[in-house]
Image 1 (cartoon, rainbow, N blue to C red):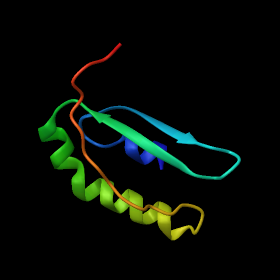
Image 2 (image 1 turned 90 degrees about the horizontal axis):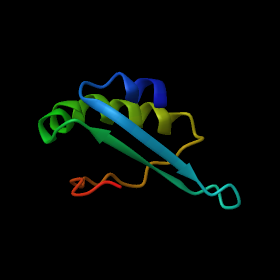
Image 3 (image 1 turned 45 degrees about the vertical axis):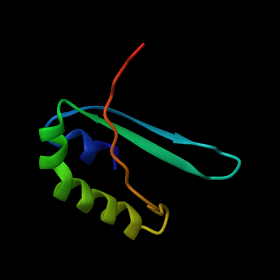
Length: 71
């Protein structure tokens, strides 16, 4: 999933986090702009579908947020 995400146009970075005890996790991907995010939607959907088809990952939702501050 990560190598494919890195190929998305406008991709700036990402974090994939997991609780090893429960197996629960989530990913955060960052894009250079809202336009870049929107243009990546279809390709990102295919990446998620491919990851879910392995049976190892279950995608339960996708949410979009704007970065308003960074430390």
